Amino acid sequence: DTAVSQTPKYLVTQMGNDKSIKCEQNLGHDTMYWYKQDSKKFLKIMFSYNNKELIINETVPNRFSPKSPDKAHLNLHINSLELGDSAVYFCASSQGGGAGETQYFGPGTRLLVL
Amino acid sequence: AQSVTQPDIHITVSEGASLELRCNYSYGATPYLFWYVQSPGQGLQLLLKYFSGDTLVQGIKGFEAEFKRSQSSFNLRKPSVHWSDAAEYFCAVALYNNNDMRFGAGTRLTVKP
Image 1 (cartoon, one colour):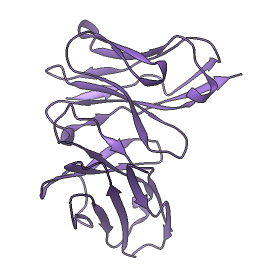
Image 2 (cartoon, rainbow over the protein chains, first blue to last red; image 1 turned 45 degrees about the vertical axis):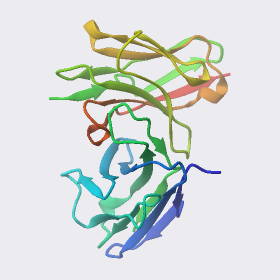
Image 3 (cartoon, helix red, strand yellow; image 1 turned 180 degrees about the vertical axis):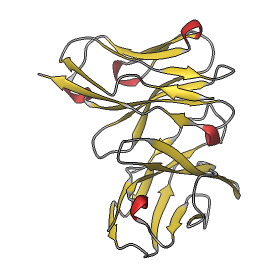
Image 4 (spheres, rainbow over the protein chains, first blue to last red; image 1 turned 180 degrees about the horizontal axis):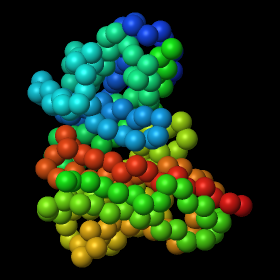
């Protein structure tokens, strides 16, 4: 069983479209995250979500919004896609949000905006 | 400013040779320190982590890392590299919680036959 899964694996879309990426974890974890990895492999945290508390990295545009229907899911919605949004997006989860907690990553969603 | 640096963008080693990947951090206090590996087309997997205690930390897949406070370093080592170790390696730090986790730029490891 995959611990953290993401769909779709690949997403190609036009500029201006709205898209969603789904994430599910079956580890029973309380905290989930979204990361963006750019073309230079640089990883940056976008959001963390714990018990309905959302913490947003201040550099993330408000076109990005995470939505959590339940503890096991944290989906990422992106409005008005831009060329610069092309990247690999990783979902992750951990038992708690503390600094020592191990994060488990999904396989990534490769987004290409044309 | 808080930062984590991996000085080597790309390293090539021969199979069976030893490996050391460098990581330096700049924080006011000792943060939690992590090494993750990313195989091609995959997500990240934790190799090992450190916060306190024994400064030599053992991880999975035969990796170890040594924390040196005086040098603000947390270098990753493996005595004998296997072809399957070819991947991207990321050092990461977090001070108070995972919301402030920062990753280094990564080191790409190539293994020669």
